[in-house]
Length: 127
View (cartoon, rainbow, N blue to C red):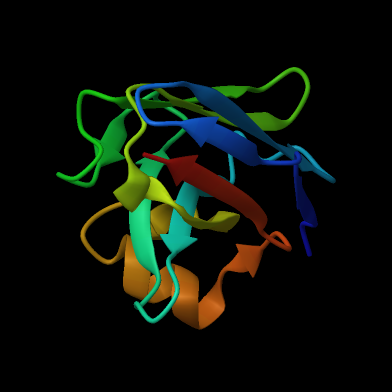
């Protein structure tokens, strides 16, 4: 099974930027739909963004236009560039992988059910 490890998150003021990375233990590009989730205190975990091997992306409405997901197949690394951060972006962020077949509207449920997860990294945005 693939193992995922996120980079350290951090703290930033509103309007600032952070980039998260996630290193995979194996080649994920042709097998997995890669994505980022987040969970704020007292809230359910939500899917933030996903990307497939064709470079097709999906973003939650709450981050569209501010966050960019990308992956480097050569280094098996997934990225999330976060710009114009807001206090409501404060959460634990998780990198996740699920079979490519679920890189559609079933992505979030399938990843919760049968995906592979990193340990999570904290992002805090202060106002």
